Image 1: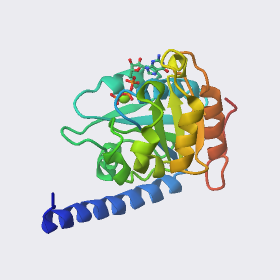
Image 2 (image 1 turned 180 degrees about the horizontal axis):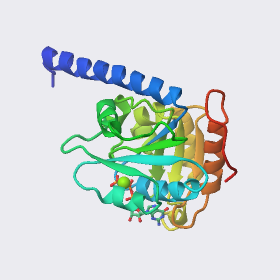
Image 3 (image 1 turned 135 degrees about the vertical axis):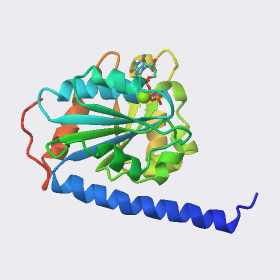
Length: 230
Ligand SMILES: Nc1nc2c(ncn2[C@@H]2O[C@H](COP(=O)(O)OP(=O)(O)OP(=O)(O)O)[C@@H](O)[C@H]2O)c(=O)[nH]1
Ligand SMILES: [Mg+2]
């Protein structure tokens, strides 16, 4: 099926405009030394469960907040708010991904200059979010054990445009005979050298490794020094 050239042009312009807004956001986050982490995955891979745990662990020690995208509900924002961190919902309507302009709008009138970490949960989708830079420092792709080991091979773009991978729901790995070595091999085939974490938000397994990794990111030059040991 051929796509009308004018439609392609419009799409290219939308993406270009997104990059301009994302670049401005990135400069702003850098200037205020806020480290921004976005989470992408298929629907239900465990982004909110993981983020709720993460915010709860980080909140007493760091200045953290979260933005969460969803097509229709504010369920995830309500779940994340249980961590006591400031949270804002972005409702995208029919749009299957977040765009930089939505982040910019959500930040209007919200004092975020003091933040150490801002987390952004994208809409559950393994395809569309890969095209949209949100001005984040770190993009994390989550893959749950119930989705199958082949997903990195079937959705290579989202793995290619992400910085680290997290295998979620490890507590269920045995029940679904998940082959962790195979998935890691598939991730490496698509994105050689990609760092991979294994977590369970139910049991807490692997969370401290990821927290330590985040803490190291804050210690990078240009970022705020860690204000506490977690
Ligand atoms: N057993 C187990 N279940 C989990 C884990 N993490 C999440 N779940 C469950 O998986 C389901 C989906 O989790 P969510 O955190 O809502 O997933 P999500 O990626 O945020 O979903 P969307 O925002 O709708 O894309 C829920 O029923 C969670 O309780 C885990 O580590 N172990
Ligand atoms: Mg969610």
